[in-house]
Image 1 (cartoon, rainbow, N blue to C red):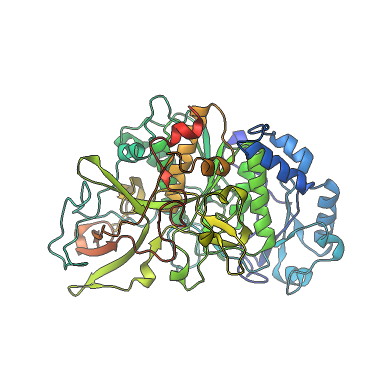
Image 2: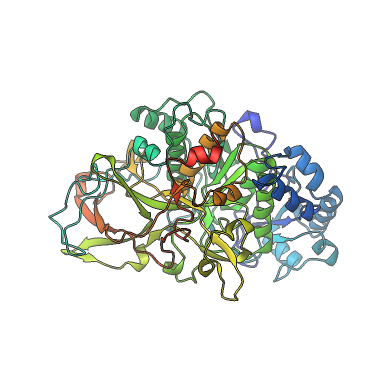
Length: 610
């Protein structure tokens, strides 16, 4: 058997999971040492009972609304039986695989072994003996499913394999001047016109105070104290605590209390498995800083946990651990898959995790993605996994523009890029699209809470049935309008030092919204749990700012250093064009770009009831 360890002693007993990959082949390529990890997912006992419990504690009209059960009670009532676990484990050992540590809620049995043994055990299509097939939902690690990735996409594949020294800071990126302190302040007349006029320099960054004011997060006495938000990502980030402390100091935010930020790390969390060159620690360093700093900006009193798994192999497992171990009141992801997942075991694992979260009063939030409806990647329009699950709150992104005097405009995040080359803008837009994910699920049916709100034209699928629409809400998540983040970076001269840059995405939008939920929990004096029935019940009551298409924002010019961080090799200009929507277009009411809209300044009061 093998297990996980943790750097946070308070939850050491919880982190004992073994991993399973998000694979892309029937039998995935072996990891270092020639081993392959698989995972058999088991169903909850009394699935009807789980569904009824979730409905009862999540429906605002139910007499049992918010009468959550404890994790121990949930396991006692619904965890797969010990007999089923024993039968599955015994079969895995008989076929020559090493069985890993089964989680406390007994939702899956992990195993690993040589690639040839795995191939022989499961066959070309993951077949199981009848006795075992009757006890499980399916197998993860064998069937074709999308790769879990962090933002941004696409992540370049390094030429060289990962090494034990793969924990160096990310290459420095520090944007050059000019930039605009408010929308339209500095017009870039030295570069060619586009859309009939010279465009302004992009924003220098939305301030923390502006972002908090935009969503009514500046209520006196409400700062997230008493709440814990868990971010599930990958790798450990050695510089994160010190960087967040420096970043907070520069913004006049409260210093982190001792223990306010915890990192819980899987073994080898500073390395990248050779088989997964997409997911380097450098990418996750940017991700973790962006998420934790947005959380601290919006809810400076909240406790924060960064759960760093080894790689994409354990992201779904880390989410399950955070929920089953009760590590926080709100659990959010820093990852998603670039299209829907059709592997039944993977779908079930996320859905069962979401059921346990709802039953125990934990809010589970997932980013809706950053490549729109996936058509820019050559795929059919679709939402992303796991934001498409009906039992999670899917958070999309907007562009929040602050004008002179603090006036704000908010539009859907959907942008293309053009680079100035030989005095002209290169308009290869297809490969540079960035925008909020969304669409209608072909996997999940429309949940009841969406029926009164989501237009039938958006929910209807090709076969005439109605599907789950994504996202549910949206907040600022545009790299040109997000807040400035700070982190240790490696500069061209080889030195590592703290520096700041704008950065945002759908995941940072999820962090902003997660912080808002922490504020609402504090204001309400209780966990709000699964949010969607309550959110959709507030539609049309002033809780949301209806984000619609403006069509008049034009573009912004971003000036970048050629070497990424210094003026040594000069600068270049990149044009960012707003509101370049695919099929997800903001409209009055619900839409698949911004969902119900963004939180209004009344959202906190209406959601918390106070």
